[in-house]
Length: 231
Image (cartoon, rainbow, N blue to C red; front, side, top):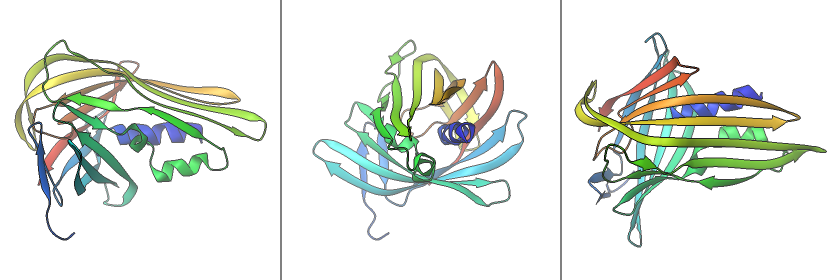
């Protein structure tokens, strides 16, 4: 079960009435808008897609806050996972609420464990520069099952903008910035279950989500996602 929880969280890492829109740091967030990504395994075989929809945009003081519903489908079109992300833009930094990385479905795995979580959010600057080092992010949880202590830790570190290149994907051609990072996940229930991965993602100013994300483990490509549609 512990390995299933870790892989489920990884898959996430792979974010109506009158239309309300806001602009912030070059981003336009519009209720009812959204985007889609296709998922592939390490051999470039299609394994499904993820659909994101912006369901709410509000102003909280100087910040623009928007909520994104996500639904993941397998290659046969069957819904497999749903989640909701909360993001905030202050004009200089785009922040993803790290508590969004664990969905309500995944939280069921921690039922009856009295889990308490702390978070360091994921941040993206409004402007990218090659060589920039971005802030670490984390999710940490502590609980217990009877007399047994339980610990869950996910750390996203070594986040560096390593280059800039022209990237062509189904959604278009972009001047993209290449961001590398390491992810360490560990769950301890009597004994530790660990998973270490490396990620390469491509981002562009004015685009809320990654253009493309590749996930590696021990140097082997495990899978990747590409942005296919923005609406």
